[in-house]
Amino acid sequence: QQLENGELDFAVAAVGAQVPAAFNCTVLGTQDSYVVVRKSHPLLRNSFSVDDMAAQRWVLPPSNIALRSWVETMFREHGIEPPVAFLQSDASPAVFAPLVRASNLLTVMTADSLAGSQGTGLVALPPPARVWTLQLGLFWRRNAYFSSLMKQFREQVVQVFASRPVNRAAR
Image 1 (cartoon, helix red, strand yellow):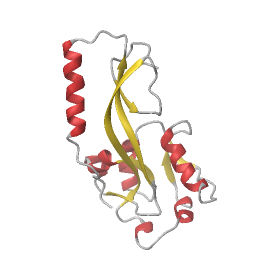
Image 2 (cartoon, rainbow, N blue to C red; image 1 turned 45 degrees about the horizontal axis):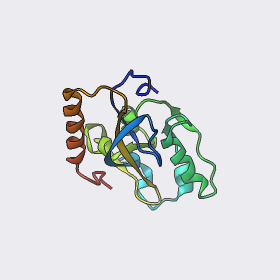
Image 3 (cartoon, helix red, strand yellow; image 1 turned 180 degrees about the horizontal axis):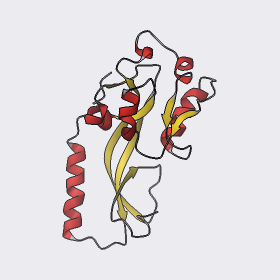
């Protein structure tokens, strides 16, 4: 909405099946997201099931966020009612890394967050936990004036994203 209204010049967002006609998009690549726990979480001691994950307390975004939908779908596909969020927030899950690190809570984090300083002491759960892959793009308005500085910025974003290591989450 902010990009469309001209409040933003660029936005990094998920690339859908169809890019809206009002925008140009450069595909940046993919971003993996993982179910994350502290390294000494009880689920890591033995094999576990999706039922076991449902019995845990979760930090989740609101239900209108794709990440929350992915988690709920994971449970529903196994015939399990999704867990009620112990803590719900529209802030980045990386913000709650200290809380997850100090408790038995589960959350979902991107590979970049998990590989960064926020991911210290955290680990992605192995299967049956899911890995979700999202294609990301850099969007801008088709009818916007594009200065040389904006072009340089766009090129830098593309280069930085391309230089990211792939599959960075420790398992």
